[in-house]
Image (cartoon, rainbow, N blue to C red):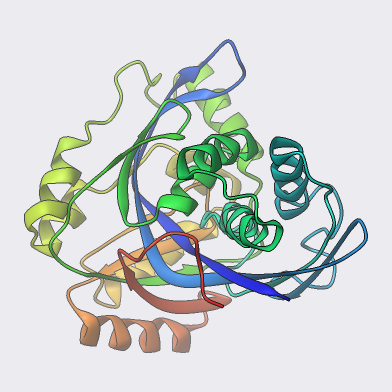
Length: 302
């Protein structure tokens, strides 16, 4: 028997980063939105753990050992359920790696769902969310999906209502950016007094109000990301990428998470298709994808 699960990419339509905490994390206030770009995890019987990867990041960029969150999710769920960590796992990636879209977190969430079914552990959703939080700050949202307000280090979630579908074009500018490196650059910029110190977090209410009632221009005006400045510092060509998105007709654009993805908001589905075609033809981005959301989180598909 094999089990297949998939989980979506995310966009941070708001990412407010507080000062560094004593535990080494930053306090966050973030609004996640899951979009229809998915990674798929197939789990089958095995002796011990074996992991393979295809698609985005295959061939070395994505590890296939204990450094991979899928492997760690398998070991964590097995220990929690008191079963042997025996499975063959394959990840088919459509979410680019190290792109600020939570591809690794999506893989981990899909692995938890798939292995729960394969091993018959019957874990409660609350248990899976707790395990997800131990794996990484974005993994619980990858399980939940939809739209959510994240606090703490991003793992404490409150669902957010929205009555419309939001259309985005995701442009990946250059090679991946290390999330720890972007946070370290933010800390450096704050120590130098070049950006606000984070003691006053960006407010979430303008984003939440725009998500509830629109229009896209209201959401565009409320977008914010404290990691955008350090990402631009580490990858200056992102400035050109952001400008290209707005010049091509995006209602608004921001760096998603720690980058290097630019998330460009379109007025509607037709505008998103046109925007994606324009940006793909300009050569600013190495990858361009149109994606809409919100979509559900990790779930079984077979």
